[in-house]
Length: 190
Image 1 (cartoon, rainbow, N blue to C red):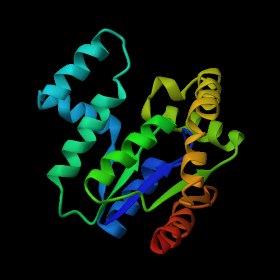
Image 2: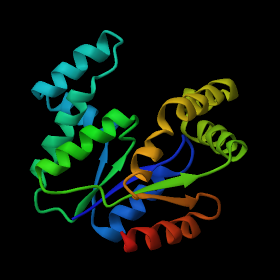
Image 3: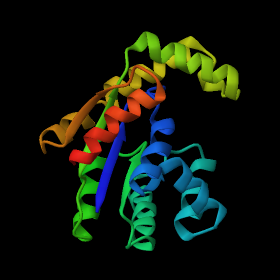
């Protein structure tokens, strides 16, 4: 089984590349946002717990998110693998994911870190904001704050996988096809 963490700051192109990776390697896409919405829609126990927390303006704790990921893995035991998009965001989440995968005799094959300079990220997000209407992508100050939070709180996950010799960096600049070609080569080696 091939299990990939696709990693990078907001605007790096993770969503776009995830779709291509899923098709090329027949992986199951695990986006924590999608999982949360699905569990809430299906009114599962975890979904109801997450909804009550979100309605109260609280973050969904790691154990609930890991539970949702566990459900998805167990529902797809014959999958060729998974691509984790938007998770893990902290070293603690990365450790919890490793523990969960170990319970299924699996591991992360590689963490692909998409590298893009801040000026390009800001330009991409502002453009996405115009096209999608996403409010959080329309204000340069808000975007700057999101990038700062990423650097301060999330970027350390690279070190977690670096210690396991699983971090692979890829230049996120170029056409969608060029970037995908670089990612595909890295995944093929994982």
